[in-house]
Each structure stands twice: as C-alpha cells, then as structure tokens.
Length: 352
Ligand code: NAD
Image (cartoon, rainbow, N blue to C red; front, side, top):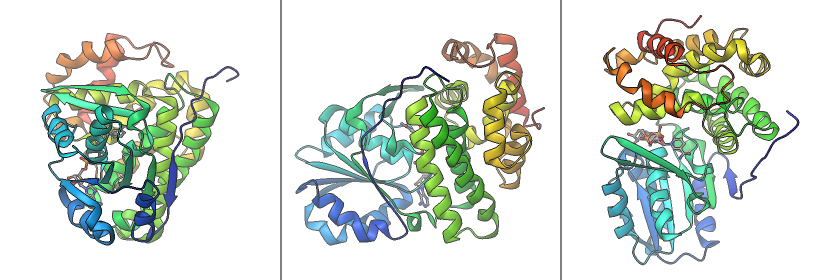
C-alpha cells in the first residue's frame, strides 16, 4: 500500500492491573474537574462508585440508566443529568461509553473512560444513537475520550460468554482493519499485534476466567483493536453487524463473533495478503476456519438462528446491507453472494 491517509488521534492511555484504583483520581484531577457526571450501568455501577469514593465530593450526579445501542431518549436524559457538569467519567462497556459520547456530542464535555469490556469504543471518535430500530452513527472528535484508564482487574468479573463474544468483537475490529475503506499501514500493524494479543488471551479464558495474564492480554488486544478500527473504519463485516443489530436488536458482541469467520471466508480469495497476515497473527493456517473453531471452543452460539433470527429475516435486511457495503471491499458484493454469506452465518456451519 503506497498511497494512504491516516488520521492520528490524540488521547492519553493509562494501562495496567490496578490502574483505575491507583490513577483515576489523578487523571480526573488533571482536568481540574469539580462537577463530574458519572455514567455507569449494569454490573459496573457498584465498582464505578467504589472507584469514585476518593473523589466522591466532586461527583455531582450518577447516570445509571444505560441501555444497549444508546436510544435517543436515554441520550436526552443523560444530557439533562450533565447540566452543570465539567467532566463525564464513564465506567462500563461499549453501551456506557456510547452514552457518555452522546453527552459529549452536544455539550463538548471531556470524557475520561474506564472500559470494562473489549468493545474498543473508548479510543474511537465514533458515536451511535438509536431511534426506534434504526441506529445512526457518525464521527466527531468531540466524543473521543481524552483519557482512557485500562485496568484488567475490572474485567475479571466479565462472564465467560460475554468475555468470549466481546474478545471476538475486538478480533473483528482487527481483521477488518486490513480491508476497511480507511485501511493504512499503521492500522494494519496495530491490528496485527491486536490479533496476537487477543489470540493469546482468548483460549486461556476457558481454563481460568479470572486469569490475570489472559485478562491483561485481552484488554491490551482490545485497546489495539479499537485503535485499528478508529484508523481504518468500518468494512463489510461491521456494516452487516450494524444493520442486523439495529433491525433485530441482536446482542452486539455475539453477532460480531458469529459473522466474522464468514466475512473472512467471503473475502479470502480476493485478499490473500491480508488473510496471510491474519493467519500468521492468529497462529492458524486457515483464518476463517480458525476463527470459527475459536468461537465454537469458547461457546459462542454457532449461527444467527441461535440468537433468535428467523431465516426470512435475512431477506428484509439484504438491501440495506448491500446499500452500505463498501465499494472497495476486496470481493465485489452482490445481492446473490451477500445472501449466501448471510445464510451461512445464519446456519452457523463452518465456513469453507
Ligand atoms: P455492553 O456495554 O452493552 O455490555 C454488555 C453487558 O456486559 C452489559 O449487561 C453490562 O452491564 C455488562 N458488563 C460490562 N462490563 C462488565 C464487567 N466487567 N463485568 C460484568 N459485566 C459487565 O456491550 P459491549 O459489547 O461492551 O458494547 C456494545 C456497544 O458498544 C454497542 O452499542 C456497539 O455499537 C458499541 N460500540 C461502539 C464502538 C464505537 O467506536 N463507537 C465500538 C465498539 C462498540
């Protein structure tokens, strides 16, 4: 690749076991924050409050009504809760980060993010909002968290199924960085290393869910994955998952985990260099089969039908996906070959 454009993104990263407990107060202080809006939801709410205990007097409000895919009504309520705030601190998965981003989008408030899954949203300038069943995404530097504190200890309680699916979601960010429209040598190198760390961490989860080494590899891989995704953008795989997730309210990470091997198989013959790099980083000869086997070993549902999708549902979204499919995808996407890809992901048979 001799001609490319790469937008290097600003941001401070603090990474390490215990980093949140040790450094979050200092990181918040660096902004001179006096009126912090804490955004945290689900099982991250308790740990988030504990982390804020040393500077609780400066947490003016906590917004805990986090919902998947950030419904516009949730965004509005979070913005109201932010009135008078000078910093947004979010602790949680991609939905929590997304809610903080919705606040930053209209208020310009800085975000300090503490991710507790492998979604990677915390290092991208991409926001997403859902109106009814339609999710809209956009890019705006105002939503890019200024500081991210990565602490593997906060991920030790992430259940097995979510850990696997979220780790494979990060894997999808890395793999697509090789053929997404904004592909570039920097994101490719970052993605390759991301795949190595994710491939090192994922198998270890089955044996020891709270294994510190595996959790550290996975969170580092997730950071690299988010960075690669931020640089390269969304390719065919992300477009498919975006449409399916929005139309049928499918679980984000599982959908990614199921679809990815089929997109790799779909593109393989037309992207030999990318596939060779993915294979080497993954340590598997055939990356499509390797990713499918890895997902199966980790207990991810085999096909979209196991997520409750009916076969006929695929026809209703085919046109929407086709309209979004990148024109420079390695293999030209047609209604016919896309239908074949979706059907394979629906049945869950091993890609060939
Ligand atoms: P999520 O944030 O919805 O979390 C999934 C579940 O995990 C929730 O029930 C949550 O409470 C729980 N959870 C989170 N951390 C936990 C922990 N440490 N221990 C136990 N439970 C925990 O899901 P996600 O996969 O992290 O994020 C998905 C969302 O992020 C989607 O809306 C997706 O579109 C968005 N996303 C955005 C970008 C971007 O660049 N804008 C990138 C990736 C993902």
